[in-house]
Length: 71
Image (cartoon, rainbow, N blue to C red; front, top):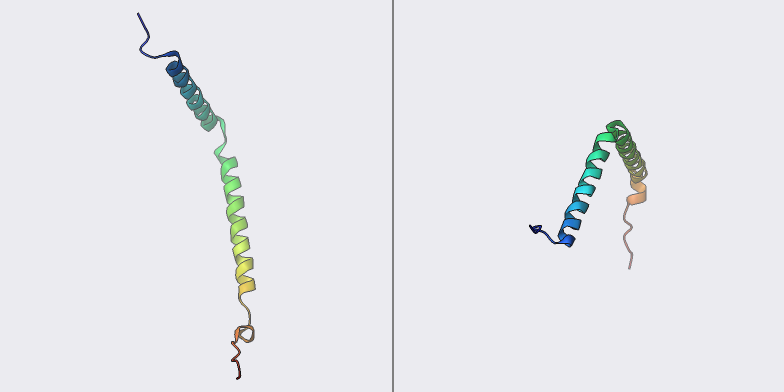
């Protein structure tokens, strides 16, 4: 009785199963709190940078006046 797949196809099937198993185990054994803390840190950092940028953006009106060119 012959196998319905060639050796190369069996190798790819086993490789895909192995990679799928690794991702499954990684999702089971990683702590979701650690990932959320990293995400929270990045979000807080982005918000802080936005506030700093907005603070720099709010300049006085005198700085933004357009001077007319005199001929």
